[in-house]
Length: 180
Image (cartoon, rainbow, N blue to C red):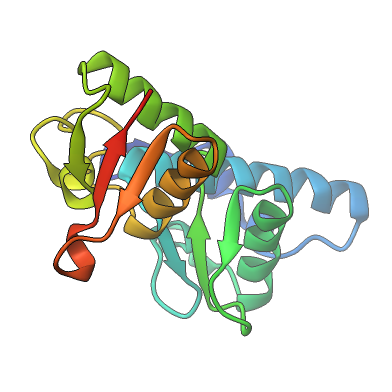
């Protein structure tokens, strides 16, 4: 039985071969999809995974102990279910690259505001890279986050008048002025 993936505890269903094949009966399939959605979000959140590439090895998509792995249809089905709930987005038309939103964009925006308030950064200026990788964000969910998701959350905050984003000298040093 495979109980862990690194430090991540796997659910019981992960050792049950039928869960690696899309179930034909609708009720069973709905339960299966629900379990996989929760597993994918939980794993991505705890391991800080933001991108799943369908055609590359992804630890959850196979269980060597029971010699089972999800085929592409199953992978796409489970990820599309997350997309339909706003918990993921396809980054390409062919559905091969999936951005995982274990927090919705609105929730990331709230986390940024919390970070600003907790650190007394109201009326401060930071670069996008400082928010993602700086000392201030260490130990927070913002640290190491995907740039695409961060920019989307910042643009949402800009739309609400909470931040102003301005171009720096190069593309990777945009500034963010908080006005919370």
